Image 1 (cartoon, rainbow, N blue to C red):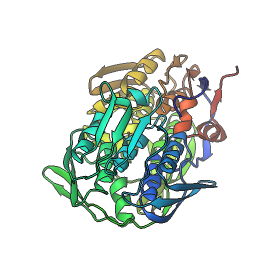
Image 2: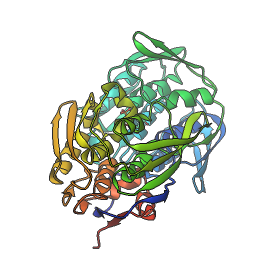
Image 3: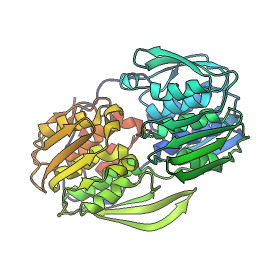
Length: 450
Ligand code: S3P
């Protein structure tokens, strides 16, 4: 979907205690990968708990365009008849990845070593994001690409007809880049090696192993060295998608700042490469516990219990933790606004090239709501005012960014005056049930009357 319909202005205001159980949807990263890897096997992959957000639906449609048979059985239950590694057909039309950086970058990787041509497009947010970080390593496999200036979409990729394996040191901490290279490596003969200095989310590696690929990871002085043997025959799988920690962050953070709250968020994926926010919140004094810790589908999972935390304090977030909570800084900055003292976030340059420039989007909106924010190219600080002292009252721009929209709506749940966002439409990309789920916990959040 390129762009979405009319803007959906939304508002939240202070409410009584939040309570109950928040069943957040399936993990977005794992959902994309389940569809893409399912399309690259022979046989039928079945998926339970797929996130049915627009980003993932766009990836499902793309997999159909490349020749896989993708079926929605209802209620998060899906199946895919794959075409096998190297079996992608040439799509007849443009592949529209909507708002999704993960979708487009992973799909580019998956097709880059097949002798087909595909053109990719997205919405205004995605078409402003850098793609050279993916097309540069893909060119080493023999894939050619031409896009707009600055390596932006729309872009056409001509897959390599005679791919060679690649050894690539990822220059920025990015699971999307790492994954694109690994997916391309699937159809290259020999061993493709990816090296990352900082560990990023490792769902691709775990899932490739689950689908039967030969893949090893070794920690060396250079960083994590991932070696994949190309041209495997991937085996169709049954995948149970854990609930998304990045979506869980919103009800968890709301419970911490709304007086009297006690919320259970069950079945959350707690892969260590994703769980940095929860560690950080605990360091800030959050009453946040893990209950019923277990393993599901190869991923650690627990029920999160978050209670109102009156004594939150600002902290310095260790920069080496950034990759494990990269999508959670916007909502962390909201919790930091209700803490005493300053929260310092360093090593977060990547936040500037997400669905929006997330440092800028949050800084402008938080300041408008009475919070002091300071920022540099790869850092920012938020000076908290403590509970009961956040003025609120402003309308914030969501910049086609779901996490910016949801973060400001959480801010309004404990502020002195309501907080509005100009457009809550993008929330549907990752957390389509955000509004009813938060309302059911007791939050005052709604679309503005037209
Ligand atoms: C994702 C990786 C991260 C993250 C994004 C999902 C993934 O992006 O921000 O929401 O599923 O691989 P980068 O790899 O660009 O950091």
